[in-house]
Image (cartoon, rainbow, N blue to C red; front, side, top):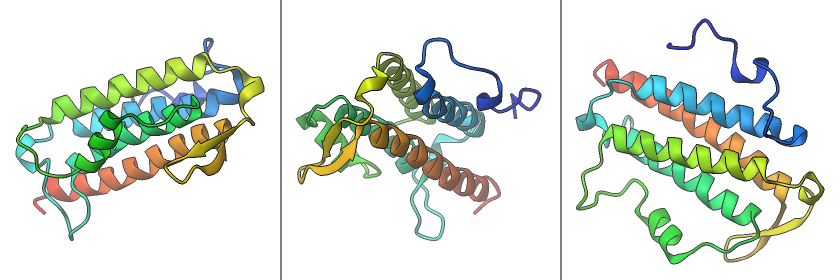
Length: 172
C-alpha cells in the first residue's frame, strides 16, 4: 500500500477544520479514501462490472459508496433527495449507455468525500442530536446518527470491495 509507513488516519492527529465530535467520521472517510484509491490503482476497466459468486461488482460498490455519502449527508443537512439523487440511486450497479472507467468512479468518490468533509467542518455540534427524517417514510435518525452511519456504511462496502477486487485480480 502507498501509505504503509503512515499510521492509520485516526492516529495522525486531530483535523483542524473538523469539530471534535465529528473527527471519527472524518477520519473514517479519509481512511476509506486512501484505501480505496490504493486498491483501485491499476484495476482494469474490463473487470469493473464483474461479479464474484453473484455478489455486487466493483462498479456497484464504487457507485454506491459515492451515492450513499451523498444521500446520507443530504438527510443530515435536513433536505429531501432530489430527482437527480433518486435517479442515481436507481442506476447504481446497472448497465447504462455510458461506459464508466475505474478512474471516473474513483474520482467521483473522492469528490464526494471532499464534499462530505466540508459539510462536517461546517456542522455545528449543537445540532448533532437534532432529528432528521430518512427516506420517503421519514424514518427517525439524528444528525450524528446519519454521519456515523455514513462512516460505518462506507467502511462496510470498502471491505466488500477489497474482497471482490482481490478475487477478480486473482482471476476469479
